Image (cartoon, rainbow, N blue to C red; front, top):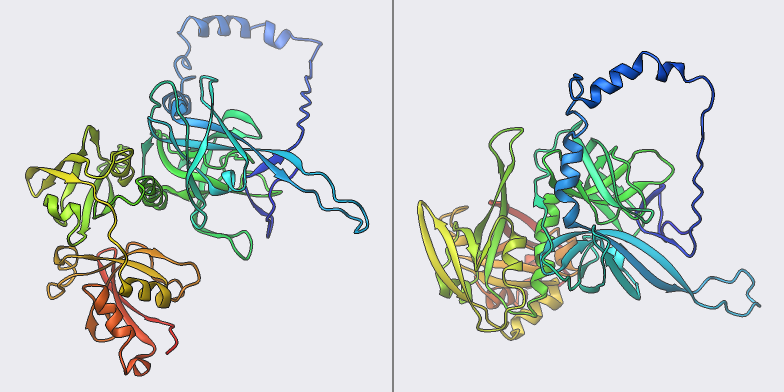
Length: 475
């Protein structure tokens, strides 16, 4: 049995493999005097069956209700991979490759069969198969992966539309709040457990290359095979994605907070468009009117790429996107899935709320623009990809700003990554110059006095605030 190939401080991701499973079920039968159960308790149990007991109606508690509500949107994942066992004796002949089974869990992203799971569930697998709650099975293929975020999207072709779960928020989770985990624990499909939020914002290191920040710690028992499955509150809202356990401990598990999962999952779906762009930069907003009430989610336009299809369609920063085609938008995942399987030039009707008015817009998807020499210089020296955004995306932070460059990709271990820049940041200045386009950035990087600028100061907008820092770049 191999729980994980990487383990530090007894923390392991929830990947589980075994070439064979032997389950021993022990049944203990108690025989002897049963007068306690057969005596005065008999009348009470008969009364309870008739519904007059004070406990009548309490069996179907919130946990039962949540399971029945969400089970159709959760899938069980089974995989196979080939491993070559290491030989203990260097003079021994190489051992033959072996097929090893793996398992995980997934959350339905789109009724057409797009499913979210963990990257480590699908990493290096040869075959994938998904089983639904009704027992039907389908072969699956990998659509997109995000190793850094430990997320992946896979696809099946179901015979009927799959139900969706409700995305909640992790922002208002309370320590001590009841939560539910559902998943393919040790291959026992659709296993359900419940517990509490033990801690918020827990940082966990797996190995030198992989770690997690800001995890939800939970006492809901989760096991190998639960990876990629949902952590839910008692309203049936997804508040996290189960990802890791503390090996050797009892009821210490971890989940990715849903507020960080949603934009990454949307980005994975966006890759499915094959480069077709819309030019919208959006942020997910979650509000809850009452502590016990359901979350209200919306998609707000943060910025619009200059010259993009979204700009041509008339989108503006601050627009609340209500509908795309036939799909009502609650999260950025809905935005991206509404554009799936549409080709270049496809016209998609949108409905947005601008102030108190409802606007109808039409967006046409367009192929990506060819990368400029300046863009390649920026990628080579700083390790980030940029697209220009207009003043409406930055003027709310500072009325003097005329625009900026949205960071769409940051290379691992690059200058930008070391400086802490992130995808979604808007670069508005370098040294003493504004950055409205690629040429502005290239001008700074190629300046004859560049060495005197170091360390190179940058200005970005993140989460509606102007921030500054320094790029650790060599002359």
